[in-house]
Length: 304
Image 1 (cartoon, rainbow, N blue to C red):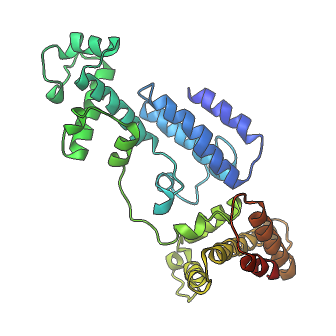
Image 2 (cartoon, rainbow, N blue to C red):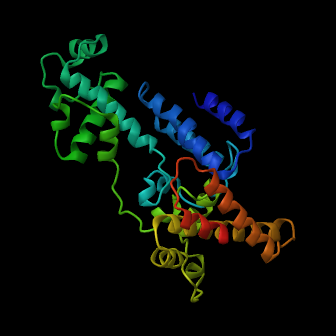
Image 3 (cartoon, one colour):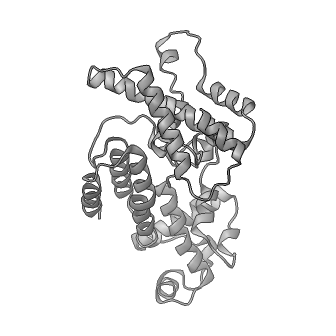
């Protein structure tokens, strides 16, 4: 399975999409294949680690087998965008939630051959809610019982086994650790912002605090404070979103100029960067379908 997964990733990597494109592909294609597999197989931890490694390498480096360190830990990406992540699924927890459905099916005595087989061979007349497998039981049954116990302990109740309906997605949310929402996600995941600008702005707002780690005590203008200033001083939702997109464009151009200076020994002029920001923001907003913009806001945008 992992070899086929790596082969599929190599085919996708040959297309060389941007980092924002890779993020979308990981979320909608590569992770979706894994999520589907979790509902069919009990995936070993080694397989889950390999899948995460392939997705991680492709997201950050565009390959399938890169071992370089990542800017942000994978576990931090597997939380919702409002909590500061990228909305990827944690496969270990998803696999647990999917296996939990098997435990629930046994508890409900669903009318299918596999459930009847488990009851006939293992459970028999015992209470499945408290059933513990013997040493001679199959590995699959042992793992299902382990997940049953883990879910019951995490939820502090076994009532999930007796409900009339089971949702893997709902169980995944209950098993996932809930983190506090960030106060900047609305600035990043703005419809007016170009996708590749969003990713760089998201990275910048992670605030890795490298200077603080190195012992440099410097005063600097916070990127978050700039976005808050735009939120306070721009009147109306349209103008605010335009300002968020412009700030994201500035951050992206700074990042691009930095890379150009390091790798190509060239630094773009200020006018070139400003023109790129203006063009990108205007073109992006014009290309968004279905938006209602007042004449006054249109005039304001074109006057910039």
